[in-house]
Image 1: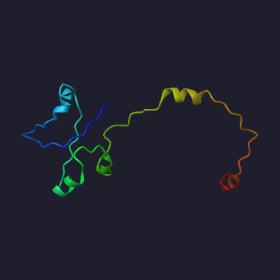
Image 2 (image 1 turned 60 degrees about the horizontal axis):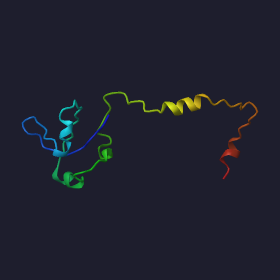
Image 3 (image 1 turned 90 degrees about the vertical axis):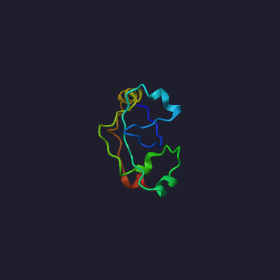
Length: 97
């Protein structure tokens, strides 16, 4: 899934899309609207900001996350077999500095 972020103002139920994203207008998209509540907050956020962390705690998942685990990495670790029957783990020794 690709994502873009831009600031816009709703105009009669229509969200104007910046000119450089016009190639997105023929595609199906998922829209999440975030209201900028005060002019003070708008000045604090750069216009071309891409850091969504500023919305931490205000966003929630509506779907399960996509599993992006690399199949090649999975196959690699599935083929590793280690015999650890003779290994004795010592917590104190492992935590020594």
